[in-house]
View 1 (cartoon, rainbow, N blue to C red):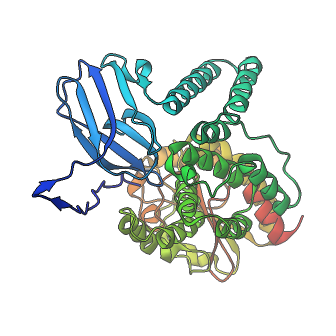
View 2 (view 1 turned 45 degrees about the vertical axis):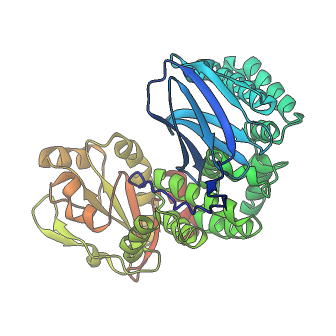
Length: 435
């Protein structure tokens, strides 16, 4: 999806006139950054995957003062969301930022705010440990991981709510063993990621770390659970959470499902998100996606494809009506497709006698390479291609954005599932045909 367009919320100014003098807005926090030559610096608020600018301050000789009435909570100060850092505004302290423009985010300090000092120290220590972990092979990470665990446990005992929350969100989820019961697997996942974290805490939705933890949660859930089951479980779970957290649930699920090319889950999450966040600036773009993808939803008739086979004869998807058909979008140059082909061949040989067929749509542009790949990989089903690569009429019709990509069609010609491959494809065919 395209980067969302940022917008500026209207600010309603209420003035109190006393003897023809306007009162000065309250001082929020100040700073002095040696060498800073920018005209202005800004305060941003996190909103379900994006930073909104809420205040600005003029910079003079590296010094600045923020004045206004922001709601107490967690914000980001900086030149932009990519050039800034976290600050907690509790309505009591007036933090003072002090640093040098060179290596600013690595070396600046907080004065007059013990809470921000403690939060900054924790974040720097935990990020340093994770950087070190990322540079080591898995078998050498145990010691550093123990240091991470110790640091998060200490943070969870902090006198400051912000530090305690960060400790919880950086806590490593416990590994789980998938159960034969999807509901049990779901319950264990929720416990692993969210046990002990109060989702009613308004600070939870004010920081990107919650967003990132949700992304990790969905990556595990989508890898371990059937889509249909997941939709039921998450809807029940979401209803028990605060409205602000629900918008985070749906936008992160949409994001991760997009990476996995799980269009049904994308549609499910998109529809929930526009209801949960009706004034979000991304709404129009997401609604366009919902409208465009609506014709390809489960239960809808699969659009017919009519393209030439290797001999130049036009073949139609509708010719296979009455069978279970896997539309397989692939190409000879696609390495993941070629790796997946032996599995598809095995399943075709097993279930073709029971009424399973495949309609291969190639995104090749070189006919010789396409035909050679069919022979080399022993792909003995119907193949078509207009040799237009990503501009393939079939790929355009089914809004294919990455391959391998599959669409399963039932004997009546209706879409049953999308994105099946590997174990998920085998499980679905076993469910349909039995062993």
